[in-house]
Image 1 (cartoon, rainbow, N blue to C red):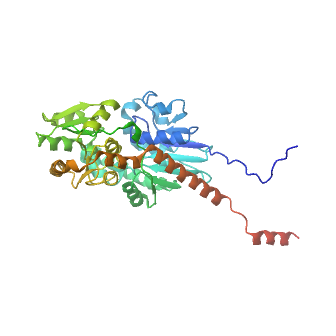
Image 2: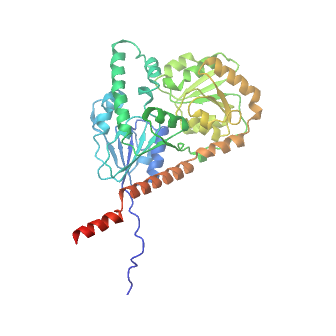
Image 3: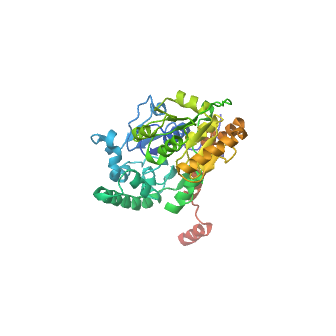
Length: 403
């Protein structure tokens, strides 16, 4: 007769996991992080303010339980969801997560503000503290035309209240992960919290190196003000002998198209195949945003293509100056024009194989390994802190008293 070995360790209980994501209007860099979190925890339930994605565009959500906030039911929410910003903190706090052991938030706005209990572990992957509420507020107001008038006063008041809530809700996070050293510094400045840096996942394997570069530059991005596609187009309009291809669409598409000269080709939105083809063949990729991380510059490097980038934000960590690209110092047309001239003098010094090798440091596999390791470490620390053995002296005192 077989007897159970009393010393045999019981299998560890698998935590019940919830993943909180700000919102799901389009598939971008934050959604790629979400995809890999789901791959790490395929049984997790997902919570988000809005889910407007078709499952064809986001196959990683097929068959998954996705809980939407009450704001999803508002009329015209798909078109005007950003106008509901004052209600975001209230809405995120209404989710009931009491049945979960591990909470993972993917947050660039309010996801980290989810309410949890002391016996739950909340790990936040922070893409950025809310840019428009903190150090980039003035830039946001100016670029959106909200820096003057009655509407400006209302928006400023909303952002003021949002900052108060943002700091308070940061205390609900047990462990912060930053998507770059730049964001780690912003987390420290904004929340006075430390964070571990784990770079976002980039699907390096779907990009192949092309060593025969053609005589054109390329930039690609959603065309919103802070991406500074307008600056790139204006700079190339002053360099009529150099060709630029612009891929992407967005609110500034018409404005950018109107700025383009004969040497600038505006392609609008294009599928992955067209984007990949241009990234492979271009002599360099142009990036003028002060981005938290910036995935597309890494994708360009995965093709062996050098990157000319504004030397602030995540680009300082993903682009090695004079090795995988060039950094320019000021977010101005003159500085970019100077960088392009320097690049053309040095372009034969850039090696596609070296550039590609550097890009592998940001792979999906590396992201999953580092995330899993960090979360398991936090779970073990939480288990140790919640099971505190009684002091032997205290136990003996109780025994003496009971005699």
